Each structure stands twice: as C-alpha cells, then as structure tokens.
Length: 316
Image (tube, rainbow, N blue to C red; front, side):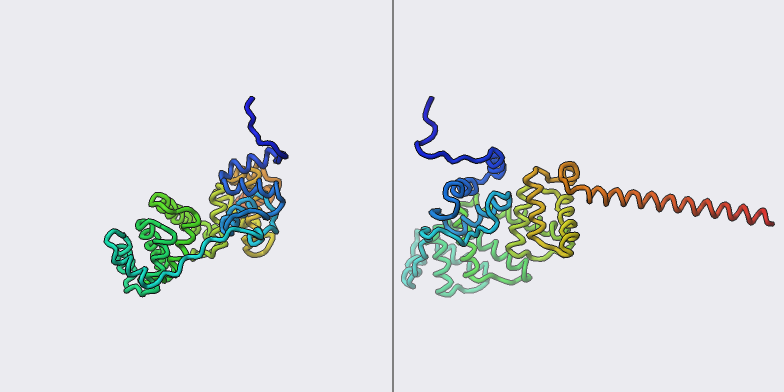
C-alpha cells in the first residue's frame, strides 16, 4: 500500500469536527483548525490579520475555536504586507503619458464618474490600485462604481466617495483575491444579495431597514451561509428578547450557532429537534387554546341571549 502520511506525530480530530469542516467548505477555516490542533494558539501562523480573522470567525460560529481567542493575537513573526510605494509626481506623469498603458483611460473614467478633476494625490492613490495591487483596469472600474453606488445609497444621490475610501475597499478586494472581472462580478453579486438579505433580516428583528454596521453584516452573512430560513431567525429573535429584554446580536448568534451545530435550520426542524422548542410549541398551543376559548365564549353568550329572549316571551 502506498504511504499516505508523512513520518511524524499524528494529529487526530473527532469525526464530528471533520463533518462540520466539510459542511463549512472553507479551506482557510480547515487549515486554521489544524493549526490550532497542532499548536494550541495562533503562534507561528504566517497569515495576514484579515485572513486569520475571517477564518477564526467561521470556526467560532461553529463552536470550534475558543470564544476568547482574538485575531489580534497574531503570531509574533507574521509576514507583513509590503507597504505601497511612495509614487513621485514623475511616476504618475510617465504613466499618464505612456501610450501602451490603460492607466490614462482609467484616470479619465474615474474623473468622469466622480465628477471632478483628480488631484495629484488622487492620481497617486489610483495608481496604487493599478500598479501596486496590480488590479486590472476593468476590476478597478467595478470597484469605483460599487463605491459610488454604496455612497449614494447611504447618503443620497450625488454623493461621491473619496479616493481614500476607494483605496481602502480596493485593498480588501486584493486580500480576498478579487483580481479578475469574473471574481469581482461574483463578489458584487454576493454583496448585493446580502444587502437585500440584510434588510429582510432587520424587518424580522423589528428594526427599520438602515445601513448595517460591520458586525451586523458579519452576523447576517454568517446566518445566511448557515442556511437559516426567516421563521428560524424570527424564533431566535423572540427567544433573545424574552431572555435579554432587548436585541442582543451576540446572544442571538449563540442560539443560531447551536441550532446550526445540530443541523436545525427551519422552524419545523427546530420544533422537532431542539430541546428548547417547547416554549415555541407552548406559545402556539396557547394561541390555539385561546382562540378556541374565545369561540366557546361567543357561543355561550349567544345561547344566553336566546334563553333571555325565551324568558321575555314567556313573561309576556
């Protein structure tokens, strides 16, 4: 038989943990879980903090990493991202004068979309996306248009983002490996879908639709990825209110995470498989009983009226 494992000590994990990682379908989360099994901490993991944070949050959502383990507890010797170069004005002038470069067309289009003449500092920022991050021109077009759309959605028509805001989002895209038109379009479709989903979830939580803060976006994206339907989210919210007397995102996330670990993602599954489902069933039963009692009371009153009418006729 061929040798499948390299020599050395063996790292074992429960089959339940392996099943959860397979359902999660995240390579980074699986690698991070193996690293935690091997080291017991984040020490020695040479990843950017954003990558660690994303994988760690996924593991925490499944209860597979300590809740008090922070992504800021990064290794003592991580490999930092190289800082962007300090482009001189001569670099920008040369790029704009290069007939073989697509940067001049990019700068013209960004000026048109932002409705202003780009300053020297703006051009340096834009060139950082183009040259340092090496994002294709078409991807930068999509990035700029998305930032404009988000700014108008949040603050009204005509509002435009600063180049510094576009640069910040561009670095996020680069860290996520969004460096092709196909990847950018898929990412934008996901953002648009989650934006609509965010408003739906806010309504389920009795909150008027509004721009979400980052932590709310993270929770809603996680619930959506876990596969919860609207009724399940609503029940988790009601239990949160009953327990906390107010909305508590962390507490509600804990409820949904426990259901996810049990494979319960619909109201029917929760009622059938969750040991805390009895309050939900009791509330439904109580509502049914209350309706039946009200109907019986109406029938009793009607019968009393008929008897009273009979007594009156007899007295006459």
